[in-house]
Length: 95
Image 1: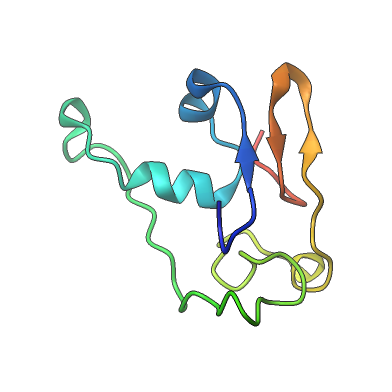
Image 2: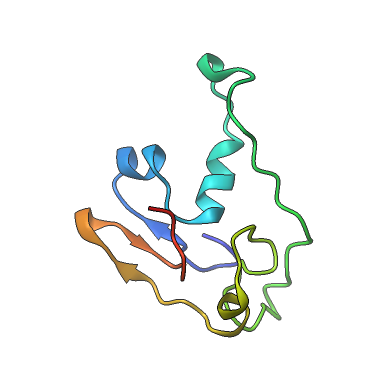
């Protein structure tokens, strides 16, 4: 969840193995893994978290997303279902 909205849903192994939303990737990059010490790239998000009382116009994550495009700042993406029971709220999810 980000600012009270679901960004990604899926089976645990699939979600941890290949997150599709940029926020999910950033969250998982912050989880310590002893076997990956120093090998995993930490994703640091820029900008301040927007106010939940006054979220951005389009995607709520667009102000901090490293993949945001103009569409993301204008149109809120729907939660779309995908193969394998996955769902993601992103215009440009990772493959």
